[in-house]
Length: 114
Length: 109
Image (tube, rainbow over all chains, first blue to last red; front, side):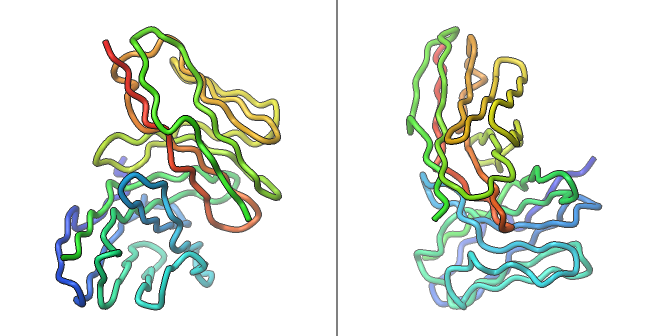
């Protein structure tokens, strides 16, 4: 079946501009995660959505970062007033939470802020 | 604070040379320890979940084990196609997964 998809695959933006990154999770998966992976680093948790519950935003690095999930499916991560340190690969993952925490990842969006 | 440390950072093996990757963790209320494989330019691919000390899981040339403080990913007779970065992650009582920085494995033919 279809896996997690993300768009765009690459995004180059100028410092100070806003960007939106999209994630389409696996159908039926109720949990959705966003991570950031900087070059040579591990994955940094950003935000977690579970069904209709309030999202866990504890990993967002600043108030320039926000995310929403519409209809319990597609999610959008927005970064406002981008900075060069925001350059990274942004990964989305989804999972069936009940009794199973395995996460399935999308290919990521490589964001470059110039 | 929950922490996950992987070692070594990089490992170069000859084809057929078995070895182990280590993941040590400090977390309260472990719900699961996960191993992922990540190829360049791709998202991580799920390999194993371990839930309790003493548990072992195997898949082809890979075997994952878990103790109360660490997990090992044993690679038996590796092949060049096993070259990748192997990531370890732990999930505790909260909702987030905490990942290690990974071990970059290179298997030379």
